Length: 420
Image (cartoon, rainbow, N blue to C red):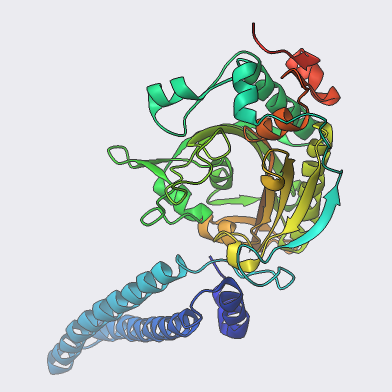
């Protein structure tokens, strides 16, 4: 949620952000109008309450006709106080509802534009030239007995799969390697809930009433997370943290669930775009003034992991129009997929500034002991999709796949061999 003080003092900043995102900037005027009316209603309520309290003292000292007149006025005041309070609450609810729909203010350094207007910040490694026709990850997965899409569809439907044998070992090894790196970097390892309350999902920045990507259990009023970021963002909700403990860094391992409602016909082959996958997610709480440096730290930890799987990749600065609701800025790391001849997103890291923490009431005390809103950031350290890049980039002519050196101790194999 955006800061009302920022809205009042610098509304043009939010207007510029809305334009950069391609969103309606007239919402700024609606917010200002609601905020002014709410504050006016509150002032009226407080003035009437003060008169009511003063009148109460006068009634006890009066008598006769004067007392009756004061009692009549007290009755009128009680009704006016009640009406003023109701009006202030109504306007406050309307303001809060509208605020919930407004995305975070974009970092001015983020590129403007839509999905295709990203800026490439860095390219690492050179795509491999094969002396044979490379197989895609689906064919390799079948040869290795690693991925079973047919039985996944039989059991659960389209976009589900089984990882079996070396496929399961590869995912467990990858995620264990990610978790070990996070622990060595000082992160607290976490196995997080995958079902959360609506206020947690909404507080993280997902609009539960309109987001078609979210799975919901209506009988329980719970939501399946699409990332452990949601659970970790809610971990310190309604708490005041100790400033000396910041940054607080957590690494969450969870299964993730996405309906992929808007991806009909996209990536239907394989395990690039699926309904369920596993992921290790970094999450950080810090002071707002430290969030930019923390964002670069998360990016560097992602680069460290990508170096371990020995694939070419690039880093892009995501354009404002392609940012999620909570992100002020986002860097994507895209791995080279040989059979597609292009880079595909493997991991990303977002600086959500104070947006999520304000919605979830996560604060810390400054040096003067005053509560201040924290900043939150997130970044993926490894996920199921990485298997696609590993298989395709490290395949050999006979269908075997060389396991990247850093990953071998976690998988227990140097080479994945086709099943006989």
